[in-house]
Image 1 (cartoon, rainbow, N blue to C red):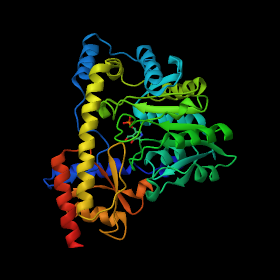
Image 2 (cartoon, rainbow, N blue to C red):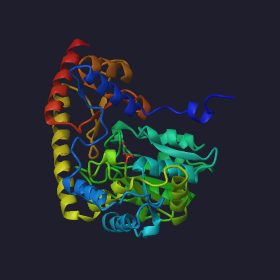
Image 3 (cartoon, rainbow, N blue to C red):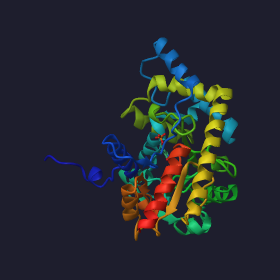
Image 4 (cartoon, rainbow, N blue to C red):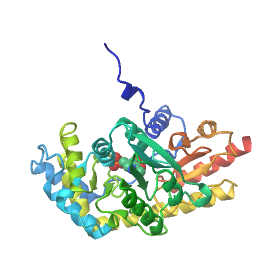
Length: 385
Ligand SMILES: Cc1ncc(COP(=O)(O)O)c(C=O)c1O
């Protein structure tokens, strides 16, 4: 019998990708639109990384790579996790993937049986619950609250733990809230993973984009329970290169590589050589990251100041490049608010699919000029409400 699987019918396509595509299409039709929808840096990939890709091409490094990644990059990853995250990781505990997305996707395929529960902290990045469901698992939401700066309360997390809890996903700095979790909170969550023997999935893809506070990798406390996920996309403006990576217990990493071996074989070989340069040419990469971080910080400050001047409310984000804007002054719900803002010339992502009801997500990975324009348009839309 022809038709689509129940599994795929139950899957929601990514809302952020869809909204961004709509904004790009409107712009292509000539509509004057400021898009605050993108989940990617607006900078180009740094030159030293591009040059490494050209070199790899010239040297004919164009063949299949092993499913877990080229050995040189896995060694550099182990070194990176030791140096930057204080994680005692051997190269065979690392895996290179097609974006951080595939690391998470393979991970849930590797650890979940039907009915296994995965705690996700809401508002969450849209893909976590969908990936969990796709692997047969059940996402269990635990709220984080604007009045608590969207930092999770370990007691609330503890109350959601059951005999079926297989994993907890944490993402600090956070998409979409911009929250950076304090070390004590991450330590408390790692202790819960140890006490109740579940996996801690720590998505650290925004680790370098922190404006206040410090990054802490909870895998330090629970090495046998934690899978740390990261990638080249946000740190090195390499979203299109599709390189992510992860580290964790050897058996889990091996299972994730087996999933790759039967699906994608390996990530792009040329992009892996380029990522090796990004990780090992520390001087050039540090300069790039610092430049980008300072630009985001200025943009965040400009946006927050502008929002408060026109009487709009947003929790101050300490990391990543997103702000959740309270939409109550615009409309009764976030979908109508996003429509109204689109009519007013600003594309934003309604919080619905992030479980950020009453909010839209603004990305400030765009120029200061665009942010100023967006603020003027917000003010104009407000006058019309
Ligand atoms: C929280 C979070 N994790 C993971 C990813 C995956 O990134 P990529 O697959 O581009 O490496 C993203 C991308 O938007 C993200 O926001």
